[in-house]
Picture (cartoon, rainbow, N blue to C red):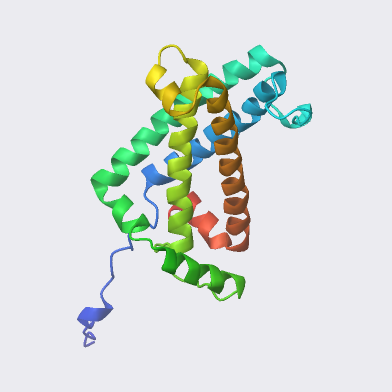
Length: 210
């Protein structure tokens, strides 16, 4: 029997590269764990000395049970957050992922994509490419996390970081900066989860890479 030649273009093609490599996925979920733990324990710490009384957080949504327990959870998650964040920035810059995924971003592009999103016309066909709104949101989250860590250092070790304390306007003002940086992070988290639910493929991609 005569064999039928197989066209070159029909040969098996190598599998596509994952949208998110393994190190990105592990980093993402560890960062989520650290951020949630720090927020919940931070709310308990806030309740011990409110910045804006009588506003406090309901004890049922806080972590730690009491001030001492909340501080232990907070510091444990802090080391995870800082270490994980430094690893992410180092790997992202070294591999070129930071520039490729998050840059460039301009106000005009963000405004264009915001209007498209409000009309329900923002495409999500290629999950490997971030739109301008995503880029701006992720860059904001990175800067916000840096502010959170720096203001947290002033609150934790105020005497050891006098210059940083001065730059943030003193110990009491550092607490205010820390509170609002936390609020920005929580807002980002809520929007991020909502978008993942609206575009389930993005959640699957962060779980299995493809």
